[in-house]
Amino acid sequence: MAKYIFVTGGVTSSLGKGIISASLAKLLQSRGLRVTIQKFDPYINVDPGTLNPYEHGECYVTEDGAETDLDLGHYERFLNIYTSQANNVTTGRIYQTVINKEREGAYLGKTVQVVPHITDEIKKRMLELGQGGNYDVVITEIGGTVGDIESLPFVEAVRQLQWELPEEDTVVVHLTLIPYLKAAKELKTKPTQHSVKMLNQEGVHPDMIVCRTERPLLPELRRKIALFCNVKQEGVIEAADVPTIYEVPVAMMREKLDVICLKKLNITNYNEPDLTKWKEFLNKLKYPKSRVTIGLIGKYLELQDAYKSILESFIHAGAVNECQVQVMNVHSEFITADNVSEKLAGLDGLLVAPGFGHRGVEGKITAVKYARERGLPFFGICLGMQMAVIEFARNVLGLKEAHSTEMDPETKDPVIDLMEEQKKITAKGGTMRLGAYPCDLKEGSLAYKIYGKAAISERHRHRWEFNNKYLGQFEQAGMKASGKNPGTGLVEIIELTGHPFFIGVQYHPELKSTVENPQPVFVHFVKAAKAYAEKKNEVKNPLLQNEMT
Image (cartoon, rainbow, N blue to C red; front, side, top):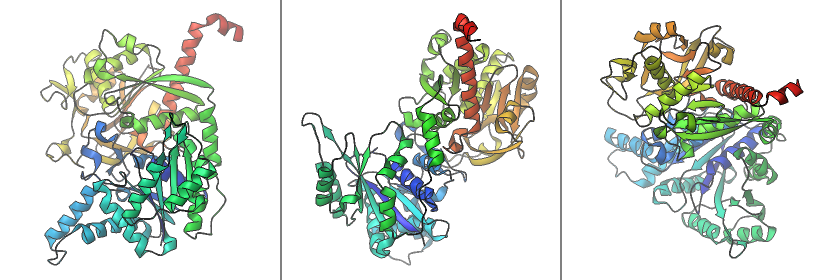
């Protein structure tokens, strides 16, 4: 049987429960333990697949096709292991399961209630990952904030498990905030005291309190928190702000968060932590030798979490290239043929982001045209690839009314069309082409050079695809299909011959980029942007270049 660590949050949302959970998991993993993390979200949506990115950030997709919370992306990026459908559970999924059981007569005529039926289903989901013998430790992050009405069933489930399981099998870590009042010039512990008190009132007693803080947590403050919150002083952990989330595991190691958990869980068979690769990555991240500016063309730019995996992939790829990637957000709705040169001036590369709907589409097409004509390194993901196809059809093939049937169902030239198996689907939730699918690459292509092999597998989330009726025209004009699904012939990758770096992919490569295994397309895109920047600087400084040579 596995051991269980529960991570709750108090005072305010967005404190970083996911990062603390992932950092603790990374430390335990570095000691040789088998660890996984799961996220329980209190919203009633069955999954975040139907949520607007403005509501909940990006929707992260797992290998098995689950649409999940973006925190699962952090889990995979930190641990370098895959998550699955079982790693993300919502209130909606819990209630849906219980109601379906009731309709089937599974409760033998009993009145179905939050306690015990809902909490029993929650406990079942909390425990099942640890029952297969695959993991030594299962970390469960409880979404929301202690005191929220919607979180109560999850907190109650944790209380019951604390009572039902042996004492050495569970640990509760409570993440809270220690605000700094500038007027008083001091850190205040009262919000934390109230948060822990509220958790205690629900019957859950934290073993550790992790304190987010802008200033150092002095020993007297730690003693005060320990005294009033009824935890050992060693269980009061400082989580000071750091420049990058990837420094958090090292900070938590200094605070001995993992050691205290191991002691409480009575785990004695473990190694000294090995974070060699992690620290090498951090060193490259902190001390880059060059810098590039990449334009991110999207329509959800007001909320950075909408493109979280893309931004993290740039961090990973930048470190590999020992290059700082500065991402410049450009809202596609405000790009026109008249201002595109001004909007995209100074860029070393252009990424057109994924998305849905017609808003901002023409701006994306205009941006692609700019990159194609000027030899600017280009990378299109999902909708970004489709925009590259439409732009090429209109401006190179002369199909002036070419479009996607997503935006224009009546277009004369549907170069992007709804997938055949999607045409009879009416329900929105969980019905897209989701999860990992294989892709065969053409030898000699840019894609083959990037991956270094002929067969790959990447994750998808889409309904529309390249219309193969037009493939001959595209390839004759110089836009090649360098990657296809071996079973259906669906075009997965397009690239442009004669361009320094121009690639579009139907899948979402950002979903598989981790610290230890940066995604190859991002790595080569940053490398191309770096070469473009160097060449641009040579042109700007010919005399300096002559002196250097």
